[in-house]
Length: 266
Image: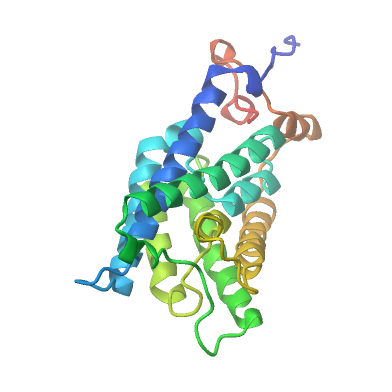
């Protein structure tokens, strides 16, 4: 029987440091562009199509640019979904979420700073549309986040033998789809960081702000449980699952003759 292959802690690897940095930078860029597309200029009011395309195309671009390094979550709900699905470590979960929130604040802050005073006051906050109750908004945010996260898991699953197409484009279109509907109800958060960043900059947390946390988290967790444990479960031993949670992985120089399912522990 072969001796157990050595494992390393991801926290001390250069690859992990690069992933954390990319997640932060990508979140800053996403928030800057997503919020910027919804600013109300005197000469032109943003349309729902404009905001939806800006968000979707930005996600598509960032996933293509950084996806192979950090996974490009850009969203605490997505990161929690990956953790629930036993695909990332608790260390990565904590650092990603902290840097996503920090990146959202910085992205919103930069946009606020470089925008003329008469326009910066329109920095878009997620709010419930007139006639929409918090309960109804919660359902909308949950369903829309569920659909996006299911697309993320499906389009990036390397176990699929059929054509997965372009995962970056698929995810970007899923985000666009969610915005085309969700903007009418809640402004379409589907991302707690997107709601948190501008709220901090504008120092405005309305009574329904909790919806933009609970809804995305519920939708993402539901999607993770259904995809990773019911529809397409991963065949891992308890030892392997614990190793993933702790952040251990097999070094690249030990990859040869190692089944793909056992190579990565993060």
